[in-house]
Image (cartoon, rainbow, N blue to C red; front, side, top):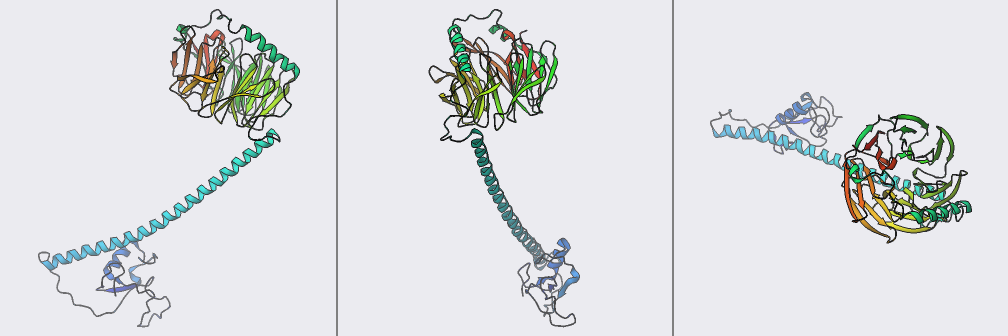
Length: 490
């Protein structure tokens, strides 16, 4: 017989009623039936019970009263020696060995239990990943199905497709052509406006006004033609008009859904929402609303004529609205969710940025895809220069801005901003490009005479949206918290 703990022959063998004796034997019998043959050295099992209170084999609650001593022929032990003799040292070593054997046995049990728990945890982790992968696949399939339903039937290979006719109405086409003819003739001969901001003045730009928290979650801001009224909204479904001269909120607009973009059409405020709606307000009252998109509207753009409004959305479509109606003029599907958009300064082209990293350029009159420019990631922001040939583009989470030349269909400059860029704005003269982000904003200056770029301003004012004030003498920004900041020369 060997001890189940130490593996040695016990001097005082005992068995546990929980792991060594059949529970059905008569109490008064002198013959015991062993179920598993687990024998223990009495001193070892008692030490284990005093420390753990359980049977070392079955892990059931056990006390020393439940141990049964086995009758065997005992060896008479000699009188305990003193520690000054070799036998006494051997006894000390024996005690140490017993303690080590007990500890090793406990460690083996804990190791087995830990392995079982680890195996179970790995199984649960693997099962969770499989479930997440399946749900993600089902979600993507559902989104694709919804997108296909929203843009109609007949789309194939991701090519652009017209939904509401092959072109705009003859009246709108005439406006587009007249606007292009008028603006393209005078663009290159146009002199700088009087009292326009200079690079020296921009170098002194600093915050001169800062509002309270108004609309948290703001993503864009639009300043009207007078340079006094700033339109923006937040994620709480509210928007408003902030007076820069009075330094207060002068009008509140009830939108009902998170605001994604805002533009001025004369004195009319137009708001885009995450619910796929485009709403127009005049004097604080809603005058019309469109629900052409199957998902969130991500950006708005106004045609130079002022008679056509465009919206783009995650449903992969862009929509032109005839504001004289107002009616929906044209809806075109593309092969990617759209994130940002703007009309060319002459009004004959429309550019939209996609989640697929493409800048898609369309003919405004018929919606045809005129050109595509590829970037390295989802398009975050784009803006045409007033020179009519350059397009500034920022990629999501990128710290640089690309300058594309439409004549060459190529990137001609990469401006290193060194901080993430979320919004862009050229000024009216095409000299100054403002780039905003959560870490601050910069203004890049292009000197046409020397064909050189410089950076007259870098400030730590965070911004999610920005727009130039009157004659570019100020820069109006709004951050993620809905705080409006005005920067002016000092």
